[in-house]
Image (cartoon, rainbow, N blue to C red; front, side, top):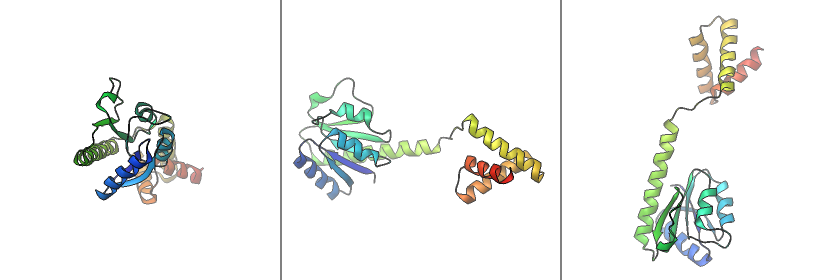
Length: 181
């Protein structure tokens, strides 16, 4: 279950929503009353969902959504008129008056969508910078020269060391370069 930050300008509303969410199995990590508190709490976490109102004393939901880290989305509980044409992509609206089953089912849907995005990103191959490729290439050249390996053997050796050490290919290549040089 991802982290949930509850944020309403009235602290009593925040506590009530937190109690509902906790009772339904969600992990609420913070209850905030301002946009700056939301952003500070989100910076401490890798991912999550903000459940909050549309207005805070220092920001409105649109500003909060734009400033949230990429791995966050926001469930805005507000009057239907709050939704504008420039609604941020990471915002989902739930109109007032709030029904508990709608809140829970919408939040569950957002959790599943966030999990799908996370899995999709994890499956995408990471692209390496030219500098990283040069470091790996230099380490392979050193192994080929010193240990009389083919390029494939040198690459497999770096991969094997990387996996057994739990480090990246680049970190392993840098280690090999420092040991051989």
